[in-house]
Image 1: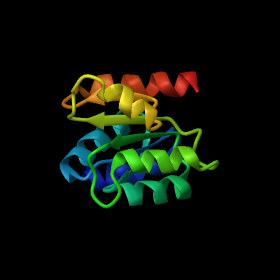
Image 2: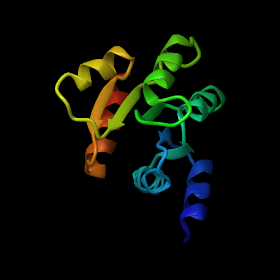
Image 3: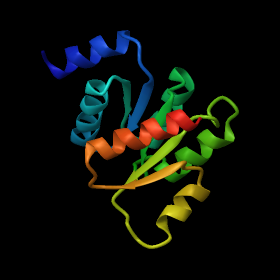
Image 4: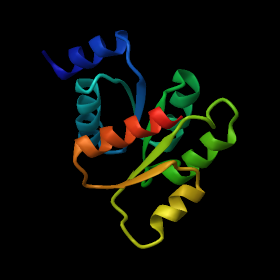
Length: 136
């Protein structure tokens, strides 16, 4: 079964929807496949503007947001999502390669509900998403 047919099949089945936002196609595909195999439905966006648009259109259950994105970065996309009454309730997990002290606090001030540093194991990422979904 190809990746496209697997994702298409899972999009029609029950499961919570994860919006995966990353400007690197390989990263989006990796995360998308792992979430699909973990029982989630997945949508993808390649930049912050597309992330805001898809969040408004699809109302995902959770957003996995890379913070270093073209057009509108993940920081601003998250601020816009949290300022909109349609999307402010959607948990946002920041996924970033920045591991400097205080970075997590800055991401949370922008509206992120959790921060995970790349690279990370897919199990940890899925676990954090499940934890957020259970607590919301």
